[in-house]
Image (cartoon, one colour):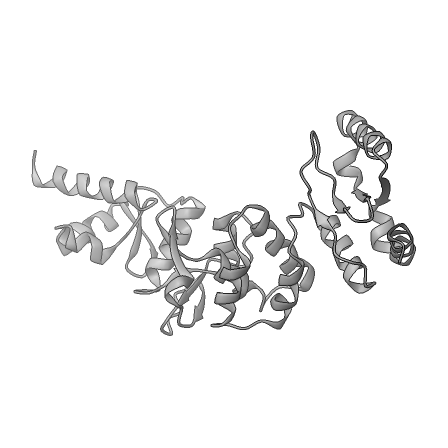
Length: 288
């Protein structure tokens, strides 16, 4: 096997390990000469993504490859962050990324770079990519997102069991956020924006916090107040318009009422446009 083949094998191995992207310094450390690297750039075996960072074999990169390339371009200590980290963790869509946080001022073209120092517990690895921890990701987004969007991210991360209150409060000691702090006392594993909106309605109207997504025999009620034996279901058309959902809703209603509980059902329009009526009916059912 000649030297050319050895160099190509090195490239292939590094590319497979790093989502198809490599740093020039890594290639040099692996034994490739400056001439070998420049020759492959000239003939299209390496494509520059950022300064000193290359895609191997083709220009098209997966999201993971694009994120890792941005992190590598920002130098030592850099991690994927903000909405890019949220997308990697599966709790939100990326906005204007890739976003990277690094302890030094470096602004590669095409990268939304944030300067800041991270604590030891603020960073981790996911899919081989340095990234902010789920808790630090939520804390960072608390400074950028509107209340409803932040609440959706928080509840999605909670539902996926990526975060704990303890981890969030620890991350908040290094980057405080009043908006996030106010949400921590009302964490429930909701699954939709409509459920989030109902919980905000309860907070605004002084309604005691319910339990959300309580495990039942076959189906999970949306919200439960055990002491008052009250169940509330919030029904969006998209989630409840199928024949299966229609049947499941009726089965749940009958089961709850036969067990001596009260069940109230509210639509999207009720929660978002008739909140005073919804609050009055819930308060009446709770005996407030």
